[in-house]
Length: 507
Ligand code: AMP
Image (cartoon, rainbow, N blue to C red; front, side, top):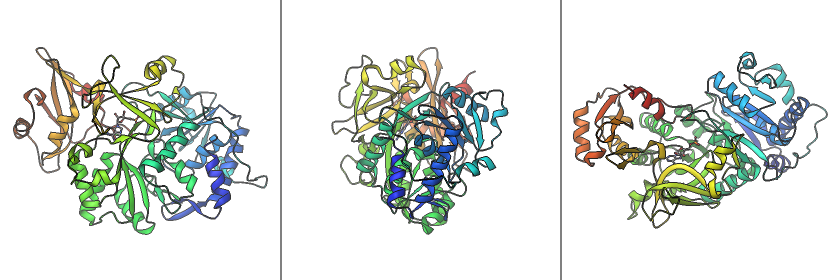
């Protein structure tokens, strides 16, 4: 089944229902949006795009973003969404790697770059050509999308690349269908009156989550600023209500800071789905206290998108449960379409509560990496996805992430999971953000180096932080070196770039 069938069906069932808004303003009803999508699909086909081809999309969040995606799917091609915050040269690299035949771009002038692949035709999202291509025209008829097999490529998802060159993760129509189905089963209901808000990049998790809302005929909302702006979110929550959005933990911190000064208590927001990086307990408590029980956690990766595990809102908010700290510090339990294991170095099941690599098998797991058979074979060895994340499973099935395997610091032969050290430091009142890495030590192998961002106006020094750590963690885990920064380096998705911190720590 072609996942674009959901938009088609909704356009027949609820043609007058609002489909997309830019802020409060209606951009298109479902009837109109499906017509725009079909028009664009015809334009892509006229440019030579056929089943099995790729169409890239390099743009900020936009009211026509989902139309471009669905137009590619409509004719049996796959979509390659590229984060609008990437450098044009990085985007051109992805366009070339994907072998896209057509690319829709924000600026329309990327094809002038030497890195741009000659065989890819560029269409500017703001151009007259695009405006003409999405205009339905007299020959439009509400025909369904082309049939697709479950195993056909639907979305080529370039991983955010916290290390090395990004790889294209092949997600099929069946992967996306399972992802959308398990959303309603495990994460949050998807309802016609919902306002899914695209405050995070649509090229990533926020955009992946459009499908279930297409299915039920909810109204997709693009914030006028095209990104994450807490004041804008508060205003849209007041005017539209039933907002549902995905946010990385760093965005939740910004939301909390805003709410503290504006007095807003989260009214109008039904659900904030957070994940993509560690959410520290101190931050979570603050968010729930201030904004209410509106938070659901997911843990996933491009290779098993949205998601692997889920921590539902009642468990996120429940601090009275006897195991509240363990549960709320976890990333939840396996969602309904996957199995999760934690294994030792020999790929044997680790004992309960013992850390090991997290493996996943099931309907949301990717087909493989685009044009990288060796990486695919390595990552999907034995039919299980090797996530590269380290975690432990408890007796109830809650999974707690400790780190990515490559981030583990080994000192004196003992593993130190950066997250544990970061949790402790982040609880210090002067610390706004922190990230720790390992640096070479001749005697011990590695020492912990902490990069600390102090709260504005509260300069930090090593001594009080050392005392804080001394009172809270084993000596071998305590940072031996400190660097104080105004900001941590982050990638386009807001993830801390430990690779860059490692480069900065080099002598
Ligand atoms: P990406 O493929 O870019 O979405 O990155 C996925 C990675 O982000 C995972 O492999 C984890 O290391 C991390 N991650 C995702 N969700 C969470 C979460 N809820 N808590 C902590 N780390 C997470």
